[in-house]
Image (cartoon, rainbow, N blue to C red; front, side, top):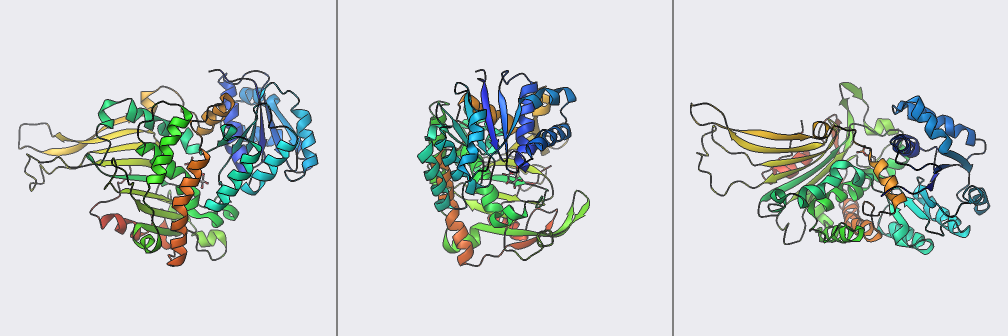
Length: 482
Ligand code: BG6
């Protein structure tokens, strides 16, 4: 479907996310001819006088992002700066003036701290700006626990129906994540073995090399569990584990995702000591250069975790007894997000198991999100030759880069145009967000109750040794990435 003419209003236009992700995404879509002529991107700035700065900041950023001068020049005329104070109802009159055309699709992206979601929503409603199909796009964090998430969702629900509320989780816009449904439901091969019958266990890793990135104020309040697991990692788990939806309809897919979240067995009380590991990076070296520890970066004491590993299980027929190990962390050895599926051994090996030449390794499917997106399937092969039989694991390797001769769009490119088209499939419904918090809250409480302080790990490694211990106790090991 073509994208209709729109006005996209970005609150927090000079913020990090807008400059780093949203404007480049829009400029690229424009360059690719996807955005219809006459559409506008309204950048909301807070300070008087900063209207003029916006175009300059955006232009600089687009250049850094590798857009050509021609592409930048094409984008800038779309940009309309406007000054609004989120908490000052009167200041929304300016916005009202700019948005006089009620015919076009109107969407408001709240790329602001969550305490502004409700005031902005109310002020937009007060000025009638959400009428005629207006949409709200909410960035994370959607609260810091179930209660605060419910409060935000409830208050937003009073000014806007769910069908026009778009809660962004940018992981859902990543190509490989969207491909999870295709992998499973468009290929006979995988879906047949997608259960405890054939799968031994699953690992989901989202490792980053970056540290605090000037986000100390936010991150230290939140930590890895709430910053990454509550949203991105659980969303990956949902798409990995869902039952086949009847259709690709937004709600059909989201109904199934909620079921996965609700089937997550709670980790509560003293279980946090055996089923979770918290870590915090100390000094070390990443990509060959020395980096300071978290506390040094922060400048004060903190008990916030920059790494979390969890062992979870889904209480469903399909997944009973299949451990799912999750881990995410900052300042890890490399940037790598992937889902690794380890299959069960063959029921009976006809190859002498005690002979190392013929011992079997389990099949593994590696779904690589980033970088080097692709799919790898590890399988046993006979070493060619007429000597003694020897078996080795080898990999079927499918890379996006070579399989498709095209640029992989950034997640936000896809998601922003989905909002304008009115497609909610890749956005989180209220009950999904709340179900995720319901599972996260007892873990946070358990950490407090049992004084689970984060274990120190060296920057540039794979997290604290306790995380390795957690999986090795069960006779398994974290997949080494390459
Ligand atoms: C954000 C988190 O949601 O996702 C960040 O707040 C994190 O802490 C980022 O760095 C990771 O996104 P990506 O797309 O770089 O994997």
